[in-house]
Length: 412
Image (cartoon, rainbow, N blue to C red; front, side, top):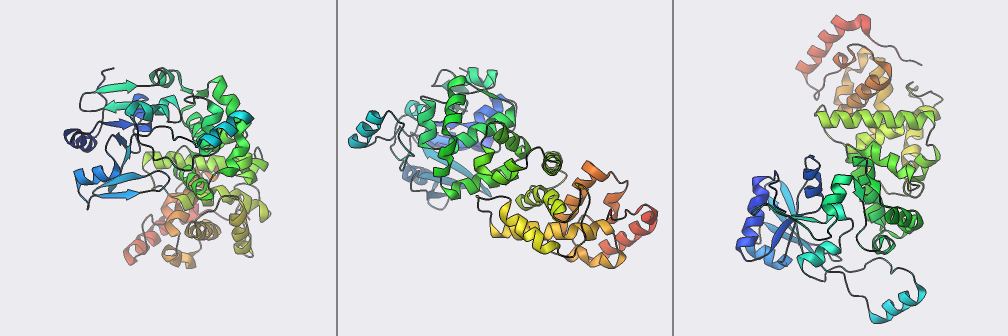
């Protein structure tokens, strides 16, 4: 099907350069889906008949890094950006004994251990996870290729449909269940019946997934501006019990409701460009209502500082289990939470807080709470938005002097 899609010129240039070198090349996957849904792609993936080594020959050794063992691919460095270029794959062949054993047991084979069997573009499409992610686009000829025959229709219908046997696809890579649910949450899509039934039956398989991959997926949820919708979809389909059991156990509580409201507001502000994306800020705001609860406060009330650090540290250590959060993220989230009561109290002697580690995130979290809960006029004016400095502190003092009658008091 011919249809010109709005693709960045630099991406078109990469595809053209590979094609001119003699390699069949397309833009693939989620970028095409997102463009068809009139969304801005977060990145572009390119698939080609060139091997990683041949990609390096086309663009030069200094511009290309070959990564991966289970799935080898090329990273092309364009300035600060990295373009992921994969070689067309086909479904890996299992040893005959393994195939006969699984056939006899009528059970799907387990996770793929190696995925470096190169193939054709059509074979590559058939081994992808969902039809809406298996669309190929040639930006040079403006041609969309739907090898599964259902991808375009499923995008239009808002349908998440596994390619091939759904149970088999989830067994090959259990993380596909998580990605499917993210699509459902982010785009308000639905599953076809076979994929939905297989997902429900396959949920325990997520325990077989690599802990490092699941931790990376958690970071993606926290950094996504649709993270609140992802968590809701995880809960609706029973996946949250396996992925983040603490939040599943508290789902529907006032604390969980408040955490989701804070997350939703933070995502809105990221989309609007009001503040930068931050995993540690997201971790802090999801933890905040449970810190309040542990300190004897209701949602929206802030605690006395005494004894808070131990409570915060223990909660941050358990909230996201069994996933492993990066230590620097946990440390930053702890600093953000510790600053909340001090910022809210607005004490004059706390001007030095602007120099504290985590101040910018702490100020942003204070604003998010204000928009969701307190709704105090002129709260934004009490603390400078940038880092410390004499001029900023002087402006801060002027702001406090002109607004001191409106200064909020700690609810506790």
